[in-house]
Image 1 (cartoon, rainbow, N blue to C red):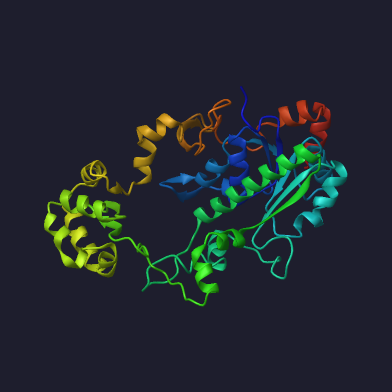
Image 2 (tube, rainbow, N blue to C red):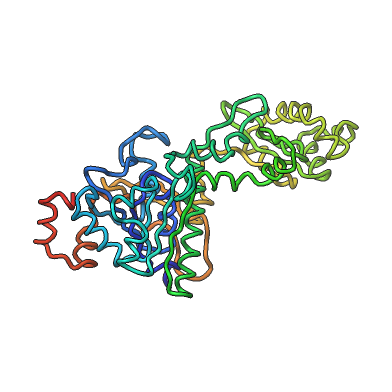
Length: 398
């Protein structure tokens, strides 16, 4: 039994997070992903930075796990030749530079199609490969802001909220779906294609009903944790310091169950809260009452009682709690991998399961820069040690 994308090879020139997250997801599905960097211009996320509770390349660790690593100096003409040799034995080439960069390098779709006529090129950028704004650079906060998602996120009396890594990952997931579709089409037709993913358009695609409301002449606004019909609906303080619980009540039966668990059945008879519409109209008072109760109860205890009563509720978990969760561990959503220094660390596995085929997910940890050149240059490209050494001496493999 093999993984669903076994046999697919990706020459991965992506950097930062959005593009690398796409190829990371495909690698978990079985694609052989060869990440291209150089000592002169390594992926910026290889640089240690204080995030996720530790000083290290945490972002890179997440999106580079499972990948192979080779060095190619794309500033050297012979580096471009070497990159083309790699593309020639690959099914997909992926890049996330600003539009125009791969063209100047001689690695755009037309150039790669001349090497392999069924190649699929993925290009991830801020605003796409065409159009008046295609020259704009961008990072995750810009994607959400420019795409309108930031303006719809936050509280009514506060500013738009910056969307960061979740935006990169949404872009990467959309790119992964598009690439799988392109691979499926190539299997049917034998033809490759350019897959053009614009990050700001991904953000706008997530706005859904807000865009429809605006098109109809309404003015959608930030609503915080409010829901247009449900109340209570929000995140409430639980007993302890910075401990929270999320509660969402969808109907009358759930409301009665909630107030029963709270030990306040009289609220079910309160005319202010008689119907869903009444509860929504008086949601500020409901939130005050619910928060007063949740603040006196440990989050896990409240979760267990509410779930048993049929109320959608759960503690708002910290990342530390997620990493230690036996359920996620049992499903392989959190796994341990080995870092280059030999230490084990927790990693986020594939968020899906397939009933047929071998187990998908992460097979290895973060690669060292150039770690797999013996395999890629030696076995796949058939280069001799002398050829490789000559390219290293010229700072092509560097």
